Length: 367
Ligand SMILES: Nc1ncnc2c1ncn2[C@@H]1O[C@H](COP(=O)(O)OP(=O)(O)OP(=O)(O)O)[C@@H](O)[C@H]1O
Image (cartoon, rainbow, N blue to C red; front, side, top):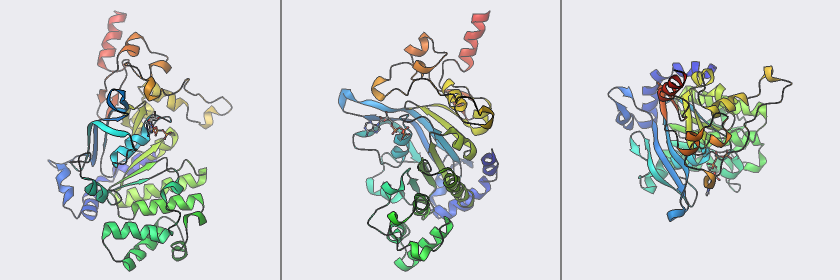
């Protein structure tokens, strides 16, 4: 858990980083009573698709706080809603999907109701995102230099010549040598790993407060994956950049994040500090994901996989969405949805079998 160790020394750099990123102005708004309020607070967020009575929830009551300088992992199988949550933060939900409830506050400001041009100013400058496949987000007909310079001049308001210097510096920072030549090249001339580095350079060129990395290394081979994750961790350390690391791979999340939110069928079913989540996972889905992580001691044995699949949005019933795959599910689980229960500081779980009430029921049954 090296990352947790890295996180501990970070808060004292917050004020300095806040000044650098916000000119020290806005940073004051979100520090309440001297305590650090989360940089981003997603609260009871609902996202729906469809119209009228046909509207279906893709996200159901997602609550996720992210502090300045924190690396938070968002993990879950494909179709759980991780990308929808990421896109909702940036106001980039696909056509047909919209926020139907809850809030997303950034430095105390409600993002959902922010005028479009205000949101556009924040995106790229203070809130940035990198995607799984850089080819879909890099413009194939513009050189790397043009794409970096466009971002830098737009948000930092500096002249082209200065922006070019900054662009070259950013390429150096993400480990790309011969920056002068690279600036004149097109995305297709680079390898997958280089393109992802360029994406990171673009995303971090304006020193954002929050970087959302949606499966940033899934398309890359293992050695390049580690380099890209190291690179993001470096920025987290040096610039105090908060990171929301989205992945289906709990192994990657375990190594890199201080806190983990486990997502299942549109809900956060468990959230805790990484060491606590791994030491004491409470939700049967979290336990299933942990059991599915390959490790040397499991060598030679078939790797566990949770039976069944994530229900589609039209297949979710009124009860716990995991009930159909859960070995412990009973009638109650199938009929009514468990609310999030706070077990301890920062540890929440949505499961009828967990918490004080469940404990009481068990005691009564054994009495
Ligand atoms: N444009 C859309 N319109 C309607 N439903 C959608 C749309 N995009 C995604 N969905 C549905 O929303 C749910 C969540 O999808 P999402 O892509 O957020 O999951 P994910 O956890 O990010 O999966 P992956 O890891 O495969 O990217 C899925 O049931 C999916 O079918």
